[in-house]
Length: 481
Image (tube, rainbow, N blue to C red; front, side):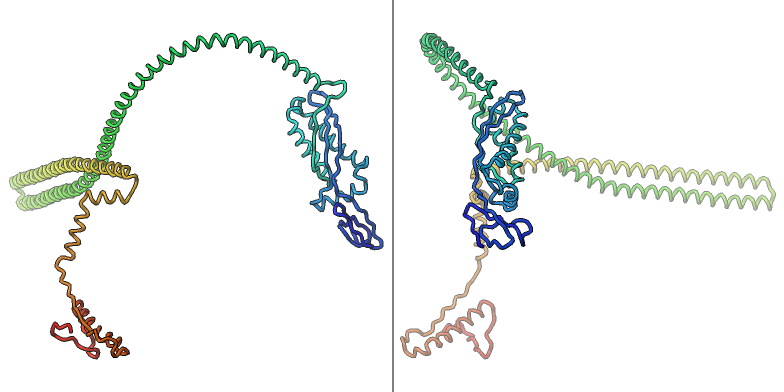
């Protein structure tokens, strides 16, 4: 048989050919299969949950929950169909199930809160209960569509809220009496104070007016003096900054120039000093060589004369002469050493003189750099002020700079010099016009041929090129016809 569910219902089919259950809005019920139809409309459940706060104060929480199947989730519908659909939604079983979940979560939550927190945070308390109850109902495929928590109610024998209301009423009544008395007091005192204040304020306003006029005049003069002083200080600071920056740049440039010049001088003088040292060493070695040579010669002669003549006199004479030669050689060696030392001293003196010259050039370059830096800083400040004066308009600033620098007259002069001396050649040709419409078919062709001679003439005058011979030749005369 074929069964169709209403818009708010579902068919739950089970039996042959179906492993678990099958949900459908319509379908065939085959032999060996059974079905039920359950309603998906939500139902209102009204409860009065008795709970206790953290201070062990009991209270009643009236609540109304609108609960029904979760129709937008098929797994939740399967849970509801298997667990709840066999029971009537208004039956005691379903109501006790829902009430047990709500009471359990409400009691657990209220036990962690004070009575004041529960009373003042009703909205937050409701949201907490709603979320925790929903987590439990998810396992049954149920959804809370709406939850309404009413005002808290006292449990019989524990009139906390009643006493709290009475306390509030008494406090309000007493406060009203105090306010009435305070108002009367203020009325009497205020009238007298108003009369005195009126006179005081009139005198005060007159005095303040005079003081304000004098003060404003003094402030105007002080502001004018302050502005002038600030302008002067700013100008002095800017001049000092420009001078300092220029000095720093000049110092660096002079330092670099000095280092380069000193390095060059040191290199040249180091070469000269090394050359003098090597020359001294060569002279000393030459003197030693000559001394040793003389020693060897005279010693050989002395030995020969001594051995051949065996004369004591010759030996003494040879030794004397050898002694004299040695002393002469040592004198020459000493003289050469002194000359080398003198050359070294001269080289050191020249090096010192070059360093002094380099220091002088460094100081001159430094001062020149300071001047250039001051000029550059002044020009930069001038350009910044000009930029601010024209409101950041680049075109206006460019035109002003060109006019101030006489650029436009220079451009005009350059353009005039460029075209000066040109001798353009202008050729005027006629094509014999004025024939009217006669021979109109050939007129245009004739006009093209008449245009060629002036064209070739112009090309020849400007470039010196001639047309090919097969096309024609130009006349040697200056005729244009």
